[in-house]
Image 1 (cartoon, rainbow, N blue to C red):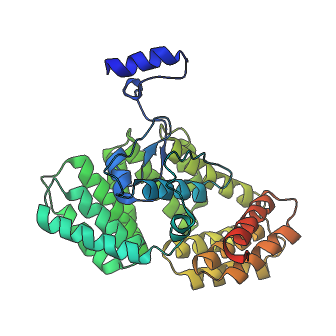
Image 2: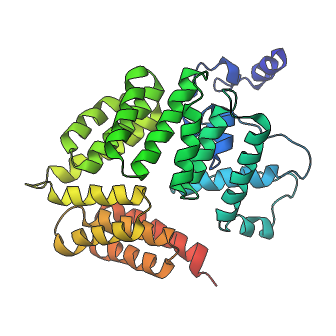
Image 3: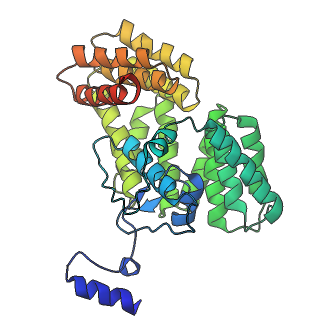
Length: 353
């Protein structure tokens, strides 16, 4: 520690400091790996610190460069306006490495599920491995879409009553997420509310409150959702505060312009279907807005949601056509800029010769 302080002193910058001297991490950047998120931040919804340096160390040729690039790619995918600087001091980057990172990760997720299962067989399902069980359930539910297996896995975690209460609460959040996937709305609400009540003044409780507010949004209870989101805008977690702000603005911008909530209800129903991975049904639901409510402020939002659905389904031509519609008919709206950027990404990743 003394050596690090000497280095900081030598640098002579007001912005240089030892990370351990920082009281809290201001925000987390999702790495794209649930395991790594958990390792570096203690939560699969966390990641690397936004205001500290994270060093990845290991033996030669163990995949450090590949993994670091995967983290960067995930960050850039989630933040289209951001950029990353990479200093290659070992000539470790080549065309093959970059191209291989674009491949579908479904097989990787299946292999990861196997690795988790084997690890848990060796470690046993105890209070010490409960967060590994939680992560396995999340992989099964949201990456492999095996809801029944995920439900069984997470309920095994919840039977470990000797576990740390916060770890159990983390598992309850994933359990509620899976209940929502199964359309067990009221059970999901009850489970989120339990965590919210137990950790009212903690980030864990704020996360539960946000997910509970999203259910109200899905159900069309926009005013109650808005009230909860207004509270969450003041959360100590920047991620939760930003997510609350984004959903709050969506409701505020589109609800006050209509004498009824019908269009907003259709849109929020489609968002629930997207969450549940019922993509074709969600696309058709959004079509109702595009076709029957052509003058509504949500039309461009609906088109952009449809673009994301087609992109997820790898129907790139259809996705590109939807972006063209946004650019042509909503050129003065904010989403037009997002559509232009997304179109450029399609050209770069799919249409270049």
